[in-house]
Length: 347
Image (tube, rainbow, N blue to C red; front, side, top):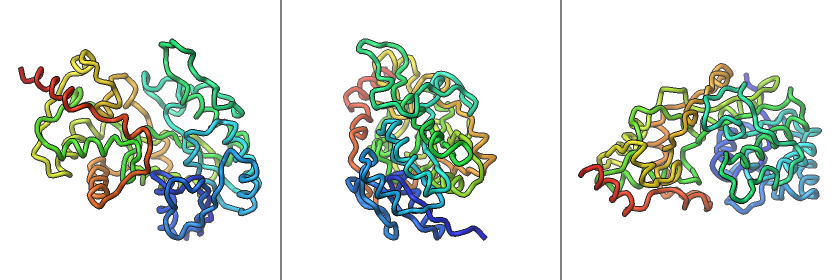
């Protein structure tokens, strides 16, 4: 019989943090959530503790609410490594394990090279401030700022808890109900509107998005695990394709639209912004070549992408709205730009 765990979620009100809290409640666990109280409320049944992770007094008060069996850190995406370090050091005496949700951006080779957990992680000290790794004006090389910050935060969690008590999860693109970035919701709305739909690249190209609920479940499994480690967390290479994904969007929405595929070179020539104007489209060689074998060996399970698509559409149809986030506006190609490219393809 699995013991009833007592966990602390850093975050807990939206997308991954909320999915972690909901999954933990479903397992019958006792759940606390520490957040600023600015992005909605945690699920019913969660004990909320409000505070700011950058404020020492708030961290001290948080520590007084322990102990916990494990901490799941889902809210460090905009924190400097030194802030992650300060919080982890305060929690280390009152928590058994620390599960830090990082990103594949922490690898030096992403998105240009295939990745395993043995791939080189970017530099980034555990006590770095928010300016560490910022690029000089006019820089035209790789943009490693975010990855360096996340790599530093990984090292911060390890410095505070020790390698044997830390699990680091490195997901790629996370989709699913509650998504705040807007990638899948944009494609679903575009599918719903019908007509000829500009589809990017090769329909047979492998893609590896992962469902937010599956990442949440694996994070909780790691909260119960023994020993430490780092895990890439993606769909299996070769299982899902761009064509299958977009067809699922048409099927979920009941759309009468049809896909018109444009080769990569035409889209590049027309100045289509990769990753944002046609979400999930990117030409870099390693973007969807992430080996997650270790996670699967540790019990990770990834549902079919078609299920994620259908459930996200159901969430949207029921009035689901994401927490307001500036990245939502980044996604989607302007109708007139799409029409221009479609005209070229038909002519």
